[in-house]
Amino acid sequence: MSLLEVAGVSVSFDGFKAINNLSFEIGEAELRAIIGPNGAGKTTFMDIVTGKTRPDEGQVLWGETSTSLLRLSESQIARAGVGRKFQRPTVFEDQSVEDNLLLALKKNRSPFGVLAFKKSTDDADAITKLADEIGLGDQLTRKAGELSHGQKQWLEIGMLLAQDPQLLLVDEPAAGMTLAEREHTTDILKKAAGTRAVVVVEHDMEFVRRLDCKVTVLHEGSVLAEGSLDHVTQNQDVIDVYLGR
Ligand SMILES: Nc1ncnc2c1ncn2[C@@H]1O[C@H](COP(=O)(O)OP(=O)(O)OP(=O)(O)O)[C@@H](O)[C@H]1O
Image 1 (cartoon, rainbow, N blue to C red):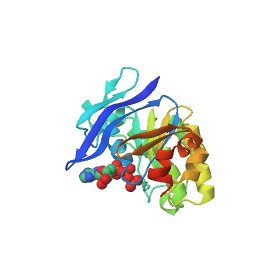
Image 2 (image 1 turned 120 degrees about the vertical axis):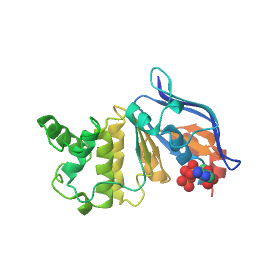
Image 3 (image 1 turned 90 degrees about the vertical axis):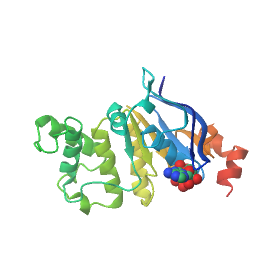
Image 4 (image 1 turned 180 degrees about the horizontal axis):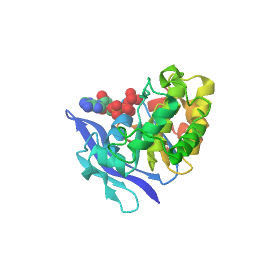
């Protein structure tokens, strides 16, 4: 069953079709990589799913009930279970790793959670579990600002996981990371995709290979090819517009 269905979606900016009759589906607990040349529409696709950009045509359907996301505001979409990780990490640098995770957990529950900054036993357990999941179990008391770039990215992924999204959209997670950091990021994303859908937009083909998942290639706002990485990288159209450049 699909969790997200994008059907016949188009959007133009000043007459230029950034997304052109785009259709594809994401399953409930799957890891999907989206690749494609610059300007292919990858960011615009994420903007549409999260409600930041409204398409001119088409449908974006969500969950078992096929709810139209186009009728929901950005915050309603986030509450419905769509999380988004932008390229640059946005953690609270002056707060500890633990407090960053706590803030993210509290945010999930009430708009005043950030004010009532108190940790319950359940929170402590959840923080330990999240920190282990992102490999920062031994960094809980460190200030987020002292972490490496990679660790900050993992912390932000942990903060998004604290919201328990059903779909996590991740924009170029490998950018600026060392090889070891990229490998650890692969592990985090693969594990996260065991219980939710994770969609990764990425240019780094080695990273995509390590994700070992279905790949959707976008070009000029449409799906050019879809399948395993080996399948799409042998596609002549993909070679012509993306890989061969
Ligand atoms: N708000 C906007 N106004 C005008 N044009 C836009 C806007 N947003 C995107 N575009 C254009 O739409 C096209 C698709 O852009 P998009 O950022 O979605 O591509 P992308 O696949 O994410 O590219 P990259 O790999 O470079 O991030 C580009 O030509 C871009 O210039």
